[in-house]
Image 1 (cartoon, rainbow, N blue to C red):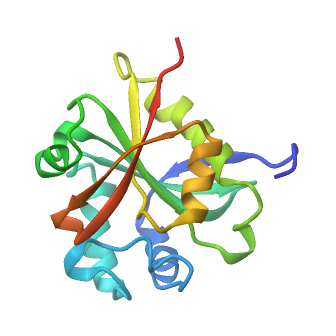
Image 2 (image 1 turned 135 degrees about the horizontal axis):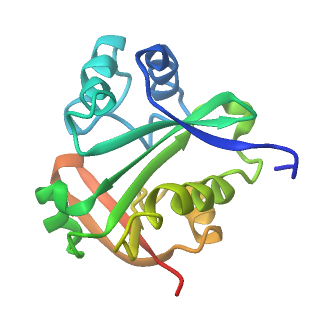
Image 3 (image 1 turned 45 degrees about the vertical axis):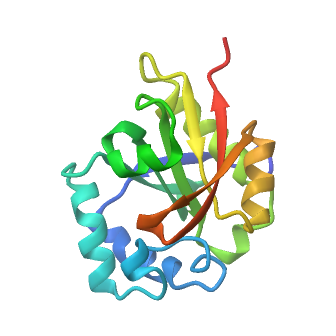
Length: 181
């Protein structure tokens, strides 16, 4: 990433759904990120709209954003309070007030450029640790997603444990970042 490039986050809109559909069907994204156990890979545009509309409208406790580089959408990022998803909170067994992040870079030309850690660091500063009382942030890639794990380590996350998450139909490699004092 060059020092001239500007990373920003824009709230998800309906205009982003065709991009989301393309990204979720990208063979570099789909093995790692889907719409949950029932619709893991190759979602239709209708499934994308159905899944993300409640988040976009604020009807879900998950906050969705597109990742922008110099204004161009290059990926997706979301955050949520762990305690707002009770089944998941039980699975990962952390404090309910911890927040979690999920993300992917959807545009092929922006992968393997060292963007993951700077994206995470900026998002954590702006959307997670800027919230009063939030002291813990989690991210939980699939255990064999080594590209993601490396980026998250560069952003300061450390491995905590691997857990099985039934609603996702697989294991997650739980990583934690504590708010700096």
